[in-house]
Length: 231
Image (cartoon, rainbow, N blue to C red; front, side, top):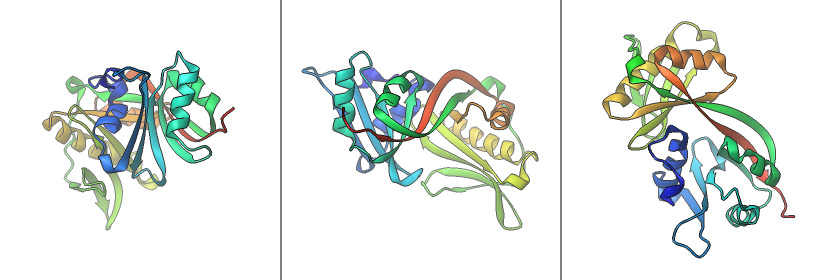
């Protein structure tokens, strides 16, 4: 099924990680193989730190064949069970026809441009291991974390990062400092940092661009959903 994903393309990086690199004991992979050794589609269910009770669903569907798409979806997911979904924008019409959507967020994929990368020196930034076992950078004041940048997942080529800054500590450069420190580390490891952000989150996009991220023009829809009864 590797022909369904371009592992060198940031648009496919998240799906490729969960399909090929996420721990096997925390993943379920269902492929659509109609009398051939080459899959025409797949659905991957991954247990992640995003939600203890709802798996994250990533997929690629045989969009030109609705019967095959429906068969694949219903063979992979139980009707009515709540899931989180990360899907390409062009899959949305099909997904909306099969799922009840509780919440939908369109996100933009930003990738770090090494030539635009702006390192930030901030002596308040320290590194530690996050709950997922991956490195994160933090700033603490009075014993409390005011900003942190973490690795959500990493593959051989890419690493997706997330940043959190306490509301009352924003616009002071803390978020930019921890993101820049994490990016510097990832570049030294030979990985290209990715920053996936809600497309209408102007402040977060501005932070990423100030470090050197550029908008790839690719989007992912993040959904909270449950599969409808089969018609």
